[in-house]
Length: 211
Image (cartoon, helix red, strand yellow):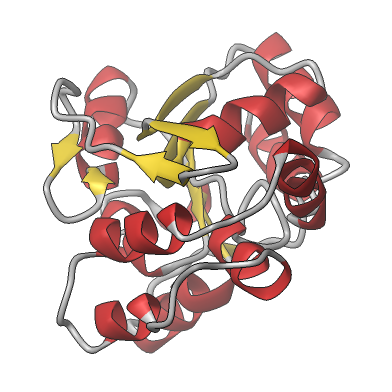
């Protein structure tokens, strides 16, 4: 199973809570530039993250505000015990993803943009140019990850919530496709079948009921 992280394994995206709760040196709306098609998704996030001005305690606080799904650990344990492999595919940053997963005792395969945080320079993203799933626009090509997963197992599943998940979702059959947020809205407009989810327990229950 391939899963997005921000907004899928968490309630909120890191960039949303960072913009809301953390001091920033930015005097420009880089996210609006992305929505207007002026800059790439990666450049928007990199600019927002680099402008963060806080200490490690502030970063811990904003990560907590993302609200990691409380059902995630048990759900992934159940899926792995049933033979599922869980892969995280994110256009966000591995710096906070791996920390949040480690905090609940999870060690998963993660494909995300590398990053280093310092209070002086914020969270500095870099493009994963050495990744087999490299994308110049988003850093990580989720569609390529899903295609690789489907090549290994035609019954691979996908879960996501946002714009960067749309292309990947189109490759997965509706009975193994899980969506909410913008992704769910898009799938409805395209009349594509999917499972609406609120938490990972619902995803695990659905997949395990298929076995």
